[in-house]
Image (cartoon, rainbow, N blue to C red):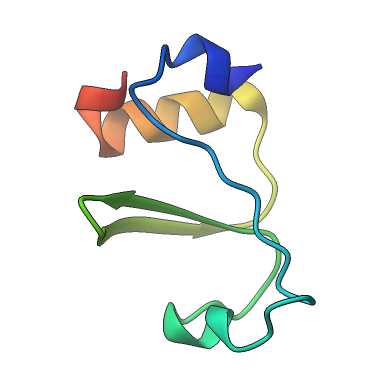
Length: 68
């Protein structure tokens, strides 16, 4: 739902840490779920823990205004 609301300005990707166990260490992931925001390949922000759709949208817009 949220991906559609962002009108292509941001891409939401789900990643399975169990299937790719080396990747979380690259980004310092210590708990699940962990949400990461990247812009042009650079990590802008990271949050651990579940979020409502509203809170996720707010966080994306605050962290990467071009996406909002």
